[in-house]
Length: 401
Image 1 (tube, rainbow, N blue to C red):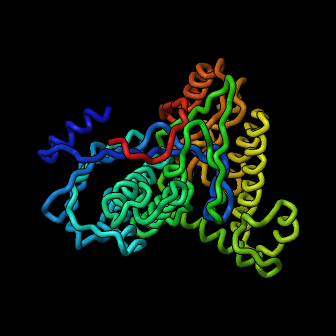
Image 2: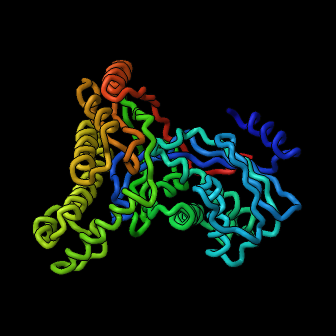
Image 3: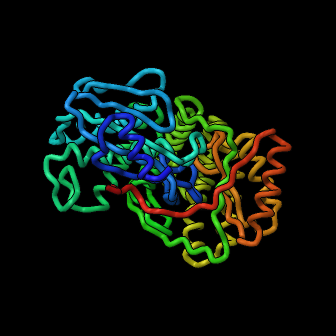
């Protein structure tokens, strides 16, 4: 669907023309999984697909939410904003509006709005469809609710990077408070700060980051969708957050730390004995190793050592499978099939896990064989059909019209 068709849909839904259009991308994380909420570094990039938002003011003092992807329609008074029951999809947008008001007391919501969303990020694929919705809403409403517009950036910001970081933090707070997922900031940050043909080396504790050029001569980033939806809810994901906190508490008996990511592999040898909980120990071992792998992968990419980068991706998957236990049959089947294809440099699950997608580095001449072999193996072993996307690395959130 193109923006012209979205405009038609908006006019059909609301009987008037949309006033503004915004876009925010999904993301894929090349390496650095489940490190973000542990104070570590990640290495995501924004994708060329994502979430669009068309808006228009109304005089009724209500927020009307419609999506071209979902049938539910919501209407909420602007003075009665609160989380909606039954895992309502509008919570990912509604929460951002509420959090803007709380983080920026000068921001005023004085009008009602008619909203229409459209997303082409495969739902449940672990490519951050929710973060894209959050960030596109934050971008639109920081502009709409701004008291002033200094230097072109709303809510008092006069620096593009700081403004985009704020959009990410608004989205993360929404995920915590309105969706009940205690996620790190990576997904929203990639959606806000993305840059075409670059990945983001992000320290999730300090929010310091670097745009690193992704130069893959003769190699493509291929995303494979399990079509086994991942479920980041208050269950298994939040369990791992708690298990990591347990590990930190027990390590602090011998070495004071705030986050597991502060530990080097050498430190780990000295402190691992302090963790009495065997599950917490496995989770911590993954985080320490993944932080080191991510740093090594970034350096490998800068040096053009793509084969080594791929090896680190594969090692990441093994750790996520064995120590963090977030892969499952579908993701493991895809990764293990990919490893058998000549011309695949590396393959791993990406995102929170529990279903979703893998990301693979594949030589151009091997892409068709990769799709055929991995697709066949996957269907034979799971009964499901995989989808393949050759990724294009795009820019972060923007106003289109």
